[in-house]
Image (tube, rainbow, N blue to C red; front, side):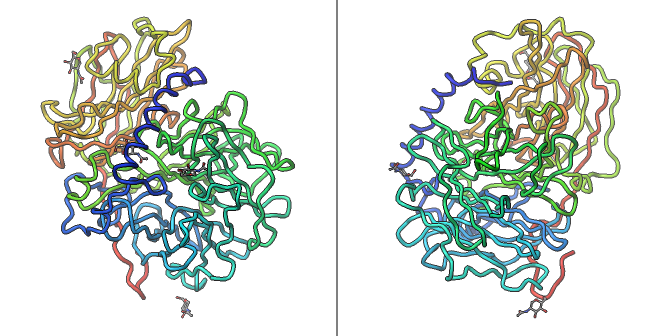
Length: 591
Ligand SMILES: *[C@@H]1O[C@H](CO)[C@@H](O)[C@H](O)[C@H]1NC(C)=O
Ligand SMILES: *[C@@H]1O[C@H](CO)[C@@H](O)[C@H](O)[C@H]1NC(C)=O
Ligand SMILES: *[C@@H]1O[C@H](CO)[C@@H](O)[C@H](O)[C@H]1NC(C)=O
Ligand SMILES: *[C@H]1O[C@@H](CO)[C@H](O)[C@@H](O)[C@@H]1NC(C)=O
């Protein structure tokens, strides 16, 4: 829907992005696409500033984290491995930290699973994935940076399969690295092996790379999971997209919400291919067909590779990874959000990076996009006495407080309705060539409209000196309507020097039929994750209020359009705090 037309204009922002990378590189260096601050990377936090720490999102007690978060379900427990700097709050000294959970919400921390110790990973153990082999044997595939600074693909296995927590992992010298970059591969851009799948009697994995500006997913196959051979052709590639980080490739069922095992095939099954584009630092996916004879993935017509295509999240969301949850037969997606307040602040805060709430993903009945929804388990944190509103009218120019809840740590579900679409503003043809984000920037909450802007004002101070609107605006375009969904950080904080984008996406919904639109926002101190229309369009913003902190944060409803909006139904819950990465001592059992 946000279609190919966007291509020309985003090509401009691409040049800008590429330019920034070059500038940054000359000042501070770039390692595997993370900025490197040598003087900060081994500076342990003396204290941790709690002001903007999250209450129910995944975080270690301190220091830097980044994706890929390698998730796995094994013998009744969920495992999460993540890229972690044990010595500082910027990227560096990366280890594979390891946490376990019974429910994906409460987590306990174990010792790191993988550290840089061997010639084949001595300069770094970077992202990867987990695969459960027949006989219930987990194996981790990851990128090691070897002593020659080459990116190679390594594996690790648990030392004791009877240990329910899989505390200890080994990287055998025999068979590592299992993939060396051959001459035709750029060994400085060759990483993130993905969960292996089994087809045609062989295991398959892909590794992200680039050739000049062509993004590439190199395909490797193996009969025994030991000796791997590169296929003649990549699984997929696309011109002009630059480095493909963190590829993810998985089947989705054409009907229903059940997830499929990564090796599941079948005539009806569709596939999703996702990459994290280093040039724009966002995650994009296409939906298509996996041709297992030709060993090729082919996106459906209209499903576009690159920044003209679909995103899991139109906000701060990168290096995501999905896994098949054997316990609940669903596919669960994890994404990482970085900070927007700069590395100097991160050093002072003593922490950087959060893991977003895991989302169940499945194919929309249209077959054209995915739907995402926070996993059901999150609801265990909802307070038993939610605040409810029904049939509340929002007149033009009004905002109304949703009182009785903590605006800093909440889960809000709301449905808005309206009587007519007559007042929808015309969609300016010039906007067809702009990213939605630019339209939202021009048409913020303070710019009065016809049908919208209306929605929530999250993490707001009492007098609205600070607020982050999560809002809709409906436009007329031809005989149809276009729904713009925004999460605008422009007024989120009075602090200077923050990155405050007006993140936005369009929602593929025909509101002329329903005259309704729904929204769910997960608010957690410095993050707002919002799901429009049952998870059709999702946006995550990071915010750093100075006034709207802790108990001072409020939640409002607002309408700045001339058409009256009715809040059909609103339910807002205070959210509790789960167990978050409390160490699980040797000999103890998980709660
Ligand atoms: C493996 O784990 C089991 C269960 O925790 C334990 O009883 C056993 O001693 C462990 N084996 C070794 C060799 O550490
Ligand atoms: C290989 O990748 C690195 C890192 O992105 C890049 O700087 C270099 O130009 C690439 N080399 C070639 C030959 O494309
Ligand atoms: C609504 O629009 C008015 C007029 O521009 C503005 O003063 C007010 O701040 C807007 N409300 C919000 C919540 O942005
Ligand atoms: C997160 O930080 C902002 C502000 O510094 C950058 O603009 C983003 O590119 C960055 N995102 C990622 C995924 O690194």
